[in-house]
Image (cartoon, rainbow, N blue to C red; front, side):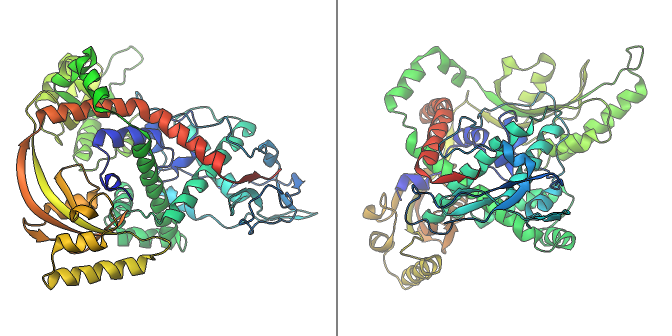
Length: 547
């Protein structure tokens, strides 16, 4: 693994990617092209699969003469009887034209989002679909084969139900079955191809990241702890929590895989950055930019077009509760708006507004926004349209940039096909004991580390800033004293021990401007790079869709 892979994508890169990827947590892979990026991150609701007594018998394909010799698990499948909507799924062994569009948008008007607690139910309803009729019995069957992995009819039915529920939750039209089924199947196939790569590479989501995602989901459902959340889910259906955890872990691993691929595909030269900084577009970097979450509770007029004092009081009550909920560190704006909408008739509006300079902000709101510290939330602000609540998520540009930096070394032991995960853990523990016995860190790094970019230099990563490394690495680096080394810890890349040689503060204003320019260029190139990679995946994979 290249040393550069160890570095985390800058925040702006990660924001761009999260708007592009269709493989985020909670079933978001199944989002159709008409769904916006923020709806992608909302928890999906699944409807129970509807079956009918009208059926059609579909004969499965015999072993294909074009199938690679190594793929032996699906030589043939028995004839299966499936729901008549399978007719709409067309066979296509190449990349189809139904790729999901990838764009980043802020919601102008929030529609009621699906209830997060229903996610677990949708994920664990994996039993084969069985119904009976006077003539035969319908048994869950294979609808497609991806490399050696079958995709079942029941998976497709649940996925379509999730996509339909998301569209309906936003009051958007649901495409007819003959369009929806092939699109959803296409995305299931793409996901499985990525999961195959993850398995081969031994990629794993960080436990901390999985726990954080599940904790956030638990809090959305009014549950204080993961243990209580597990009890609540398993009480509804045994194994629900584990199924949800597996789903979250898979989708976070896919996100990591996509980050790695984009990092390797997108090349931005120093000359590209310099050209951008010389262009008029770079003027925006000289001004402070504010990224906000903005929710408006509009006034509701009566039949005469006037708003009563009672209605204004109700709007203020709702806005006050929104302001309180937005103060949470990882506030989920979609869920906050959904909760507020249940007690309010007029359509609540808002979303992540992205970055704006102060001059672009509404005059009556700009003075309140510029006075905020990052993480702070305004009290409800009254305008002619209603009450506004705003949270400042980030602020950048327009000022001197002083940052903390750590001169860091590390030893990386990565699991692989030749080194199973348990053996990798044993090896890092052995190295840790050698350090405790006084052996030199740099020598051990040169001898054992699997990071080719730093091992030859005694594990030296140079000066590292906040945001450069993955969260688990950064957290351990910050709490390790100068001239000391850490205990072994895990990231998605393997097991690490790090050492902090020095710490300093540095004025990086010029570097910061160049990084911001690089991130803007990255955002422009990311959509096409992700789309190209997805097409390459399909071209290289074995895909057989049953007719």
